[in-house]
Image 1: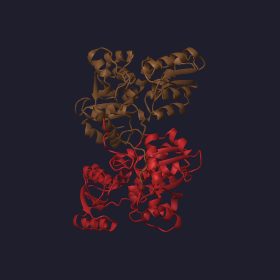
Image 2: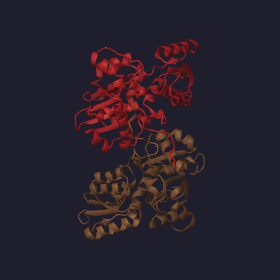
Image 3: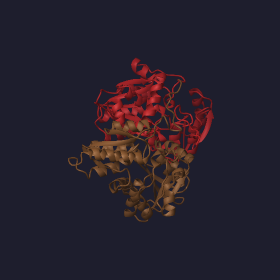
Image 4: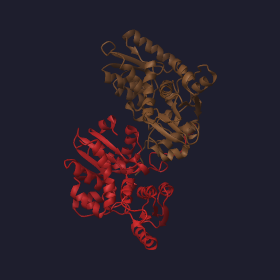
Length: 296
Length: 296
């Protein structure tokens, strides 16, 4: 999708790959489905992961499509609507305490007890390859872009995007976008050392984790730059996407949109591609969306 | 577009033709462009209309595309963003007092003074035919629907939709949707007499006018039913479109979506087409969208 109004704001010709319209409302279905298509349901009837959000939902949907069972470890205190979505997609839930250590411990216990294939949300070659199909499709349709940008959380999306873009057209500049309040990939990129963040204070709930091992390698090898944006810029980018594109995008997606709006992607007049990662927003919680009915 | 989540709510398989993604953010560009393509810019350099919203904007955009000038009579007190959009699209504005009589008087003065072709927003065969191309495209892509529904204001969209649907497939049921608070077409349809409303109290700002003469004839001849929805149902339908389809739709469009959600379109399990008429919402004014930045 594209918009004259948005182009005028950005001073560039911007094309959006809209994964908010993907099955499950996020790009995560691509990696999950790619992984499960490589497993035989007869030999691997159960897949397990830990997730408080889109990956758990995507794995549940992919498992259902493949005739497998999915079990998702969910930290207590996760957003009610996201947990409900994972359950509605047919996964069994097991709750654990918040924090990465508790999640991984719980997952280990379950695998010891029930078996099952662990599908990591981002640090997995099958997942990264799957996420890269968004850029692959995008570049098949709009080959001539100067820059392509995706948000960076664990790094599955930016890793796959960079692989696809640099393979098809090495001249395309690949840029990751991150919240300034969760800038582990930015610091990792600049220092050459994989950094992490703990419970960062950002609206971009999909980008609160730290970049994975495989993902950091791809970042170093194939990504040209990482840029950061502030929390007010994220909210403003959500509003502008709604106004200009008529699309609801989640705060994590707005990070890349905000990068375009602050002229951090390419030069004026250039052609820019942006992967909109998802559109799962809790309308009751969103800072500028309110759920109450008006008084008539 | 379509959504499993929406289908589950509606109990039907629902397909949306998304005119909120149209040039100018509404179906109105179709009628305006169809009309102006039938005029020779050398012989008709100026087109004029009165409008406080999407039609004025569409006519300005179409005139610019055709190398014509557009002059739009705008009632004082019209929504600031809509007036700004008409001006940004390149039209000259002339302000008048609110009310249909004042609009038409002003338009008459301008035509007497400057000439120009008057392009009525809905009571014009070229406009009606143009609006019908939305349904034409929709049915080319999704031919097998049991019902097709569009909102009814002046009747350009429902007239064109009915013409397209009944010509291509007479078996498709055509249903108009209207706010209960502006139910002139509903009463016209039921009584067989063209009724009007004056300054109705509805959020659906595109549907506040009364049905036109040509449009009423098409309603009587080709439309199978007109259904009405309440104001809270309109707001809830806007929210559900945002949640399920990730699309911002204007209240006028939500009227047809609300009809699907209250099971007023077809029988359970049937296939339903809905024309989403537009997505021009003032985010500062909308009852459940607030423009303020969150406190960080």
